[in-house]
Image (cartoon, one colour):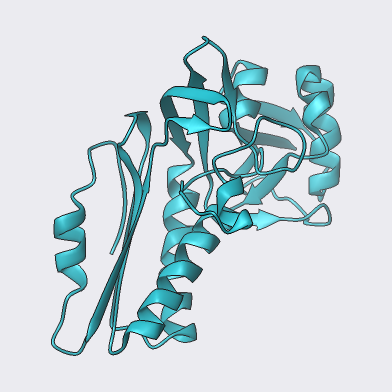
Length: 156
Length: 81
């Protein structure tokens, strides 16, 4: 199940949607709006999507993850529009017969999503500054995405 | 031929519009469209190195040949999640 939504993500329903008697493991990943990135204090975030391409890209990820991993079911929901601190920006739920594949598939999905799904976030800081984030080293303030590559993951 | 290019995020904001019409030669490539885009919207010049292109909802490289019926989009590296 793939969803782009302006409404709050119901992660309970999303998780429930992948549960099955064939699955012995269900993994849920939530990316939430973090207040501090280094010294920069976020007030709110704005997400913009290219809906047609983002949907197509998410559908491809859904198909690919089923090829690469032993997965029973997958559900991905990404929000767009204005998000406040603590809001859920993205939810990825994966079910699998065993936990190792569920964790690996979930990790693969969120990493790929950040790499190839056309969605962008704009940080609005408490000091009044605002900037679009781009995952390029050395150009911006430390981005939300950097945490994922340093291993200290506090996504988004 | 005329080519309509959708813009997103920082590219849309820098241009001040959600899409631009470009005039390019028949069988122009993304590389040609990039030059035409910069001529039309010089404000995007500082971003040329990083702007990505998509054709019919798939990422496209500089060599991709364009047709007037293609849905073309141009945007910065993605930062969702």
